[in-house]
Length: 427
Ligand code: SAH
Image 1 (cartoon, helix red, strand yellow):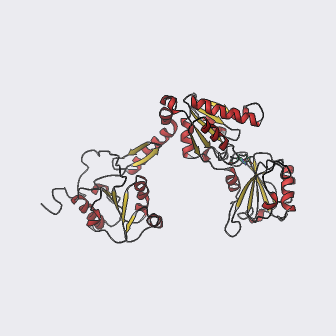
Image 2 (cartoon, protein in one colour; image 1 turned 45 degrees about the vertical axis):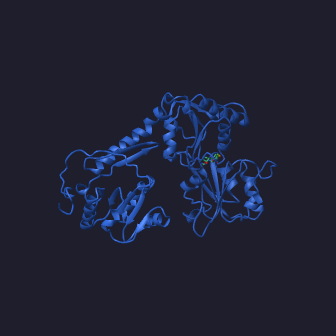
């Protein structure tokens, strides 16, 4: 026997036989990664996600890998590879450029009968990493027969298919009455591409969709024909009764075994009554998942070129509802205190009471010249942006004919990315 025993020398193996796919269950099992650069940075997260006990051998690490090491998520051996590093390992990933160093890892792995993935030389590898897409419990892994780009394009096609189609059978009516549940999903501010990946996946799996007025219509266009679509904005009665009715619809459909997605504009818990719906479902014993969304309170300023925080300009942002007038006994907002803040104030549902709100803020000390902006129907084709000052914004909104839904932003962040625009004309 030579030093490698009866194992064929690594790297010289022609492509012989098809790869045999496996799903490795790595939880608690030692996986050695050799190398601390870009390749290792990309490989390590999936190993950690699988629960592997990762031993990283490399003299130096990228900042991202360093962060994993510092947080104790992996063990770092700060030196070059030594064959003994593989003792006790189930798998090794070689993520170094140097072919001689990589070959020495391959040799040590072969000696110990440990599968060895080689980023630098797939012919020398004893295992290949596939292109992967995950959908809830489903993992799809694609090997491209030696062409990683082919693997990725097949993976992307499968991902698209799964996103659109596979979940209904798995979670919808076909799964039976036990599947009844509700997901409170944030749809984002308007652009249908601003829903989260998870939100979209659940939406395409829904048997019933209960949607708000603010939900982008384009998202609903793509639903399957058999999905029951309930337009919550068309429910008659006043707001209180309408909310009870929505709660009842969510609970009834879920108890009948259906998967109900309650789709809400922005984020479900930002002035969205999502909490009430969750409580109603919980009281009826209906399981609920919450999928956060991109809230208009941050997104609307962002697409108008206004960061809600900016270094040396604003160290806080406050999101407040302007739905109730400042002097109303029903108001829960202490506007006089908000007037004393220096940072960014984002007002939702504020157009109707804007004159009163701005007057209150000025009366309690916020400078009248503070920059202000209004963003109507942000992230949609109808988006309009008006820039003004705290003193003038209410009149300017009326003059320009802006209407809800709109977000008002007050603070020195408003001109920070477009210094010439303070107090300028609309749009
Ligand atoms: N849950 C939502 C807010 C619901 S309250 C979210 O997180 O975004 C409704 C208010 O949100 C509207 O009156 C308006 O102030 C704001 N809003 C929602 N979508 C908007 C959009 N696309 N552009 C501007 N404002 C929007």
